[in-house]
Length: 133
Ligand code: NI
Image (cartoon, rainbow, N blue to C red):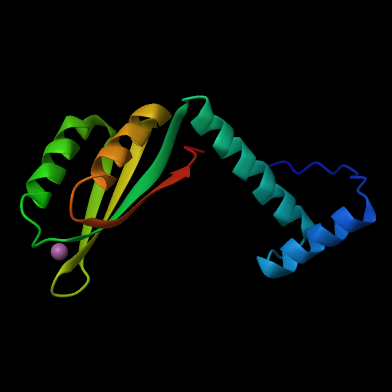
């Protein structure tokens, strides 16, 4: 990809803040930190504007909880057009970790994630929001 250069004027304290972020998040340089920040806001905008986006729903649950898995399967079938893949890992005797890769309209993905996370017996759930590109 073609890289363009431009000058950035910042107050000293903001430049120090940028350098602190570069060190804390181990960016190789300021340009990479700025790229990351632009993309972060761009992804948030896409999700706010109900654009076509991608992401992942992470669920941790106890598979012994009654009807949890059939409820989860029913919800996933209702939203099958959004689901790209499902990975199920048995963490220990009780707990499972499920990673559901999704792609579609932001509002529909949020709806799917909210329904899954709200199932009784889900210990923790998160929707990771990213972009298609
Ligand atoms: Ni399992």
